[in-house]
Image 1 (cartoon, one colour):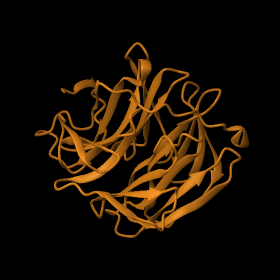
Image 2 (image 1 turned 180 degrees about the vertical axis):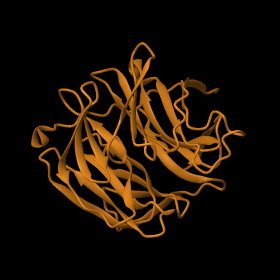
Image 3 (image 1 turned 120 degrees about the vertical axis):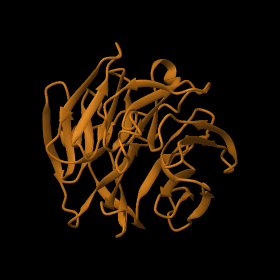
Amino acid sequence: MTLRLVADTQDQLGEGPVWAAAEQRLYWFDIKGRRLHWLLPDRETRALDLPLRASAAAPLIGGGLLMATEGGLARVDPDAGAFRIVRPMTFDPGFRTNDGKIDPKGRFWWSTMDDHHGERPGALFRTDPDGATQVMFEGLHIANTVSMSADGTTYYLADSRLGTIFAHPTENFAARIPFATPQVGAPDGGAIDAEGFLWNAQWGASRIVRYAPDGRVDRIVDTLVKQPTSLAFGGPNLATLYVTSAWDGLDRALNPLAGSLFAFEPGVAGLPLPAFNGTAFA
């Protein structure tokens, strides 16, 4: 399988790709560049500069995004250029949000981390459709691979600083079962496919790995960049896997494609995810 270049956006820290099915758009972030990108059905790209660092979003029923930012949750209308904090939150100095994703039950999961290499532990949050937001798990240094299985029985969550993906039964985060520990690089963002396999981008390893539900390595896909960051299925029938990347910390002259958006067709569709009911944040 060969990745193709979709958009040379030169993101310092590309992250948080999410497919908005109603709009047939892929959204993603440059966290450190404070920018939201989106890919239109005609393959053109657009961008919106943000007033805060943001990292993850859930498409809203009716359009727009609910976004996790360093200032709390925000509601964004990309086409209108409108950004509004709807749930102000205060994190410790030096902290920002990181990976996040809506789950098959329509709940938005998102995380925080210490921006200095995750030295201090952050937390995993869950925002429900009624607007209730709670801390689900503390003690994570760099939360990634925020993904739930289709049947809701397994929650996959990586701590990139520890280099391990954990599988948690039925959201029981006290039962932290090691699922996979890459021998090179660190586990980053992930996505679940329709067969229940977990795809994982691996920072520093120039690869994407598909894991079977039992943790077995099923497939390895080489990337065109050293630091792939996260994944999202999208496109017609969710047949395309999109890949974000980062140039942060690299010699850009030696890594000219770092920070671009890539894609490939893995031969299996993605797990459909719902839009978020954002009436509580209207």
